Image 1 (cartoon, helix red, strand yellow):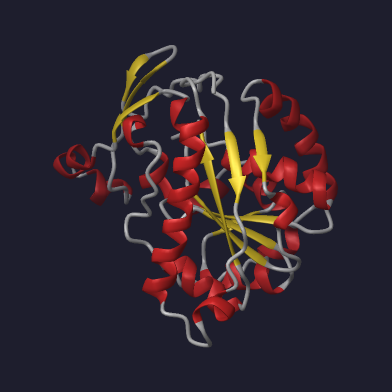
Image 2 (cartoon, one colour; image 1 turned 135 degrees about the vertical axis):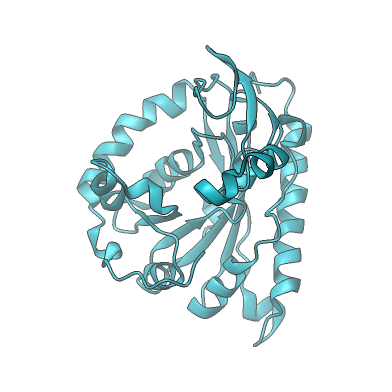
Length: 268
């Protein structure tokens, strides 16, 4: 997350009525096509909370819709779910829709405002690097060394709620992040991206992000873990490295457990 000021009052743009209608449209898709399940919401803490998840699904990640649909069903729409997102999401005619349904630019200021307002903020520290991890490494927690989420939670005085998801990396066969290819082609300088992912899927076969393959109907399961209250567990001045290591450790343990229960790819 950057340190730029979130000066667009994005938090105040959340529209619970529109969000409820959107969830109504998305629910039959994620519950039928992806047969989604979300477990562990009964332990979710009151007030502001930072949900830290692994990111899956490449160009079509379903982590947020799957989590949000079950969260709103349990807690209602008076408690917004905000998702820290890349600026590119707000370009074009759909930018207003994303803002009004809880997507906000990934700045520290936006995250702090949303958390202090009592909102639930979802962050994927690994970003695209995580979302395009190879399918053969789908059950590995890797944030690419990013730890800014810890400072965000400490500064806002809210707990971290880890959440892990399995199945999203089976929507197509992700072969490589293509970091070497991005470097050789100068993609990082041109597009501010350190990856050029290669995958194989339907209907185009091999793809380097373009043309985009459609996601296969894989079963996606999300497990929400016990909240981590930072000052209670790590003292008045939590060490960022220690907290990050602990968060990734409990997430890895939970993801490994989900993988052990999964019988078949795609089918679940």
